[in-house]
Structures are given as structure tokens and as C-alpha cells.
Image (spheres, helix red, strand yellow):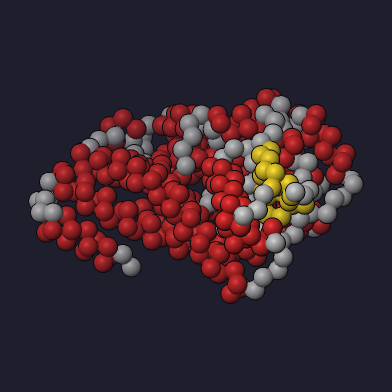
Length: 325
Length: 77
């Protein structure tokens, strides 16, 4: 599907600009052009498709579905899957949390949503697909959703409701009042399409600078860092590589957009893919800024338990990836 | 005069929303009180789950996205 992009990058860099094929600079630039075009095309396509899905399952509808139906455990999977399809913005995590709590959705189910939402989203899927192909992306998405389910179930079992802030408890009591939720007016599919395409373009535009930075770093490393460079330090044999990578990644925050092209180069230069993906999950899924936002609704103790359980799950999936990929 | 509240914790999209609304008001030659609500506890008094949201005279009109000028115009009409 993307052969023509490679041909174009080859032609542009080696023929038109005239940098020799096989030189560090030539390889770096070629990689940059190829990756940028490919990822931006994928990003637009995937954002567009997700936009269509979202038009039919807006968050308000997801909430009312989850609060009306008791699914004997299935609600965790549902919440986690919904988390994957909804676009994520870290500034929305508190409103989402409160919205779910108000809808009477159990805390564990809310956590399932909250864990998956940043891990699996349109941008992460697009860049992973562009960089690693279908198999790795599918495994990543499946793991992300499973991670949400398992963390959600564990957190739900722990009965941590008393560790929410007073504000949330007050909202809980008010929830009984049952206010009418905002519902947007119905539109036909065709009426919606232009808006969806516009939103998709908007997302592509807003993340492009980060993609370019990520790919530029990746391209520089691709051209200049020798193959197998990292292998000597953190190869598959180093048992502590996964937890170490995850612990370094947790406090950091970067969008999936910026981190994937760098991860791709890590892998090309010899870091096992499981270790790399676990690092990525830790970076995009948990971060200090997110913890600060959550402080409005959770006590520090609850945030610590939440982060702890998710961290352990990510470490497990890192080992798992290393085994199967 | 109409009161427009923009609910959002200060992310980029919330600022864009404010800009679009201000431009539309100028284009249409209308005036309105624009109020930015950044305190999350105040924001959650409206039952919304994604920001930015636009509230016109106490009624939530849009959530979760930056509106276009046309949408703002339709809302004010």
C-alpha cells in the first residue's frame, strides 16, 4: 500500500536532492520523508473512521448504556473498549470521571475506561500501524484493552470508594436527583460526514508538529545510531529491563504521536519490542500531570494504588510482548 | 444581552473555542457577555463529560469540540 511512498522518498532524496544512497544523511532524510507521509495518511484515515464511530457512540450514550445495563462483568470489557474508541485528551479525564460517577457507574468500570483511554486511541493506532505493521498494532490494542479490564476489575474489588475526595461523595448524593443529560440533535450520516472529515483534519493538523519532531528524532537515530547499539545494554536477556523501562516511563508524559517513531528506532537498534512497548504504555498511560489532575477527585492514596496496579499490569504485558512478538 | 460561558480547564481547544466565538460575534455584529469557566468544580455543575463546552444563557449547547463559526452563528440565531 505504501510502496509508492517509498519510491517517492527514494526519488526525492537520492535523485532530486542528490544525496547518496547508503550515506547516514541520505538514510536519515529518506526515513523522515517516508515515515512522515505514511503516518500522516494513516492518521487521517484512522481519525476519520474513529470519528464516524464516535458520531454514533458519543460519550453520553456510552454512559447511559453502562449505567442502565448490568452485564455480569462484561461492563468492564465494554468500558475498556469504549475507552479505546473515544478520543482522549488528558484535560477531559476529570470531567469523564465525574460524569461516570454521576451516572452511577461502578468505580472499577470507570477505572477500566480511564486506563484504556490514553493507551489506545486513534493517534497511537495510526503511528503504530505506520511504524510496526498490523500484527504488533493488533496485539498492542488487545493488550491495552485487556489491561484496562484487569486493572478495572482489581480496583473494583478493592472497594476504594472511601478514598475519593469529599467533592465526589457530594456529587454522588446529588446523582440521585437524575438530571437530564445533554443530547445533541440527531443528524443524518451524510450531514455528519463533512464535520467528521473536518475534525479528522483538525486532529491531523494539531498533532503533525509532534509527529514531525518524533520522526525527526527517530530519523536521526535511524541514520546515525548503529544497528544493535542498545542490545548490549538492554537485550532480551536483561530481566530487569522491562520494569526499569516502565518505571522510567511512568512519570514522563508524551503523546503517543511523539513517542512511537522514537520507539520504532529503539526496536530497530536492538531493544526488544516488548520492553519498548511497555515503555510507551507507561509514558502515554500514566504521568505526573495526570496525577495532578486526578487529585481533584481522588485522594493521593487512591492515585498511588491506581498508578501502582496499572504499572504492574504494564510490566506484565511488557514481558508478555517479549515472549510472543 | 446573552451570556455565553465557555467551560474548559484551559487546554488549547478551549482557547480556540473562545476565539471562534469572539470572531463570530464580531462578524455578526452581536454583543454578548463571554465568561470563561476554568474551575473544574464549577464546570462540573453542568452535567458534561468532555470539554470544551459552550453554555448559552444557562443551557449547554455544545460539548467536546471546537465549534465552527457557522455552528456558533446557528446557536446565537
